[in-house]
Amino acid sequence: RHRLPVEIGVQRVQRGAMNGLKVDVRVRGAGSPARGFKDIAALVKKSGFPSTVRDRALEVFQALFKAEAKVHGRRLQDTHLHEAGADDALVDVLGACHLLEVLDIQKVYASPLNLGSGWVKTSHGVLPVPPPAVAELLRGIPVYSAWAEAELVTPTGAALVSVLAESF
Image (cartoon, rainbow, N blue to C red; front, side, top):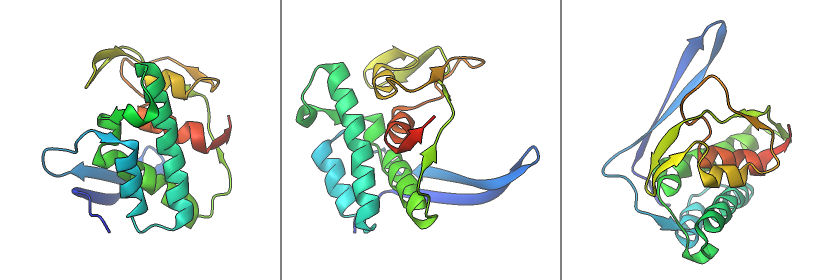
């Protein structure tokens, strides 16, 4: 098993009239290097999760890599993820896929996504919201932009929704 340099904190919170669990993922150290699909696949395969979780997570990462490759005009095997290949993204994707499994969720539905607006700093410079990879991942998915000048859908989130959501 490969241990990522992350700390995961879970606490019960109340937001308005709703109770729930808040999960914080904190990366220790300087952060993770840019990773190719083979690097991500190796980490996912060593994760110790059941094959159904690993397969679903790899499908999410493959969608993310395909979108990044397309918008950068590269081949998938020559594409590296920077922010989206970080340790916290691995936790996000594997965690979401694991929870779907342990909670026995058979179908995922999503409402239209509020993308936000404005600009976001990335390893490729300052990009408009949504960044090109997010726009590619959400092609054909109902989206809108209102009430926030911020990035509300990350590439990791877009990949999760594009792969896991059955309908909107």
